[in-house]
Length: 234
Length: 191
Ligand SMILES: [Fe+3]
Image 1 (spheres, helix red, strand yellow):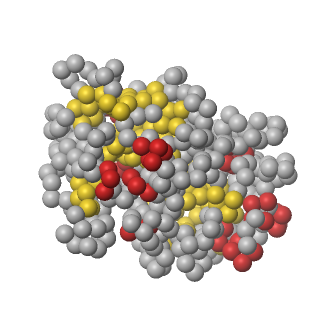
Image 2: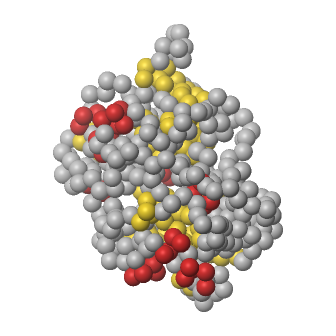
């Protein structure tokens, strides 16, 4: 076998640490011992491959998963999945999940006193095309309160899970919206120390993908390693 | 509103919403060659309490030590229908369970074989980055010379090695202790 090169590691501060005292759930869950440095072997540079699935339009259009239109503002979220050199990654599996327009998840543990929407499930998935592109139609998720601290509210966000080409490039993160006034107050968003890296999690309003009289477009590119790597955020 | 961190009003990640589609406990279906194993365990926090909202992902080679991936150019047989990937959420008691086959040895950085192992990602609320670890196997002579185990403090190596359980052949126990006494060894692979 040819010698393995491995993937480039992120710059300090551009990925969150495990322990963030301001994020209370990390206090009893972050490891106390230092991580053990592991060079990349065949085990790390390989990873699950997801073949072409039968076309499932409902999986990429979250507004078509019920019997009628979900409430809220329709949006189009699209972007590219890129490798550490900025090259598009085809066949990357992108999974998303989100709250409805009122800020409520369809989940037994979500006790927030906001209405469920019978026409909104809030999950989707897509494989990137030959240009590394994905595209979802959904509704803009609502902000929601959480128990982390007094008067804690999560900014509007969509959870993303991405499988790149390797075990190393596995990413779970969150996408935010430009201009959200809650971002400076959110301990989760602020777990990534580097401001430039953190701001990669904020989507950009996109005139090009906006559909006239139908839906605003937001662009969110995802970089799976290297200097521009998208920070993780579980 | 309460000042306490509670499980209600929780921040996602609500993995059981977004990531249930691919959840499956059986990694190797019938017809896949290899020694059948069952891996059971629990995810525990720094207080020894079960973590009911974790997600465990496994990645492994087949019994010949070949990954179902284009970067694996070894001349070893590919096992039809064997992807080597599994995903399971922990339950209310923090428990998870996988059935699979014991992987064969794959090459290490020096070209020498590594001891058989399964790569693991642990996701949970409160962990902004996933935790990366490995499952090794009991009674495995190759463990003594494995390069990754060799990087670990000998007193902590045991956290990476599954234990025989239940008296049944192939029945293994392997726990994830996120913090504190018996803390599992987690690896830094950069991302
Ligand atoms: Fe959320």
